[in-house]
Image 1 (cartoon, rainbow, N blue to C red):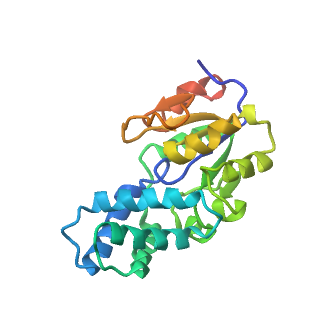
Image 2: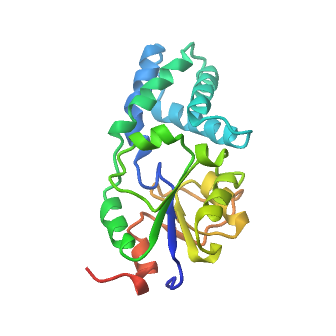
Image 3: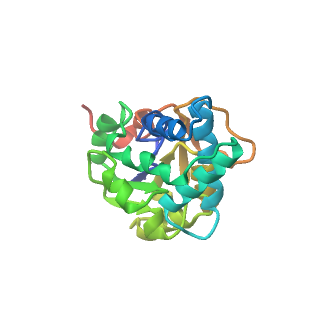
Length: 229
């Protein structure tokens, strides 16, 4: 099946376009080292911290950086570590060095020939500006601008309000089942789950319309309107 009538393709950023886990493990290793907790697996620590971030996205809006610091304090407590939440600055300092997934640049270049492109991200504007996305987007939707995050729908409502087209003319591609699917599907947005890590879909989230291992796999879906190489 191909989608013939889409006008806008929106993307989650971190985990979909940017390899956020691999790009930030170094910073979190520094955080654990300063807390004298190098015995803790950095990936386990990161996943618990991210889960706390998502929990706080449901609360009244506060800046992403404030959420990250709060979640770090909670994650230290969970692992029994006497760490300094201010050390989250190591993570913020790493944004300039974050890396795109290898398929991103070529895929977005092709899509941009036909579609308007948007990003929809649970992020502060200043951190997004430091992220090396290496292109401009037609529409930028951040939690800071929307004053809310994805999972309760606030950020997706911001997308709909600013898209300049109908919701059935939008395709959203994102990696987080607990923010992208949970936030977008109740608003009747069409969602492609970019399941780069090959994880199982939780029974607690709405099912996506499509599942792909990367964003270059969107091209056949949209192929009827894409120019040849």
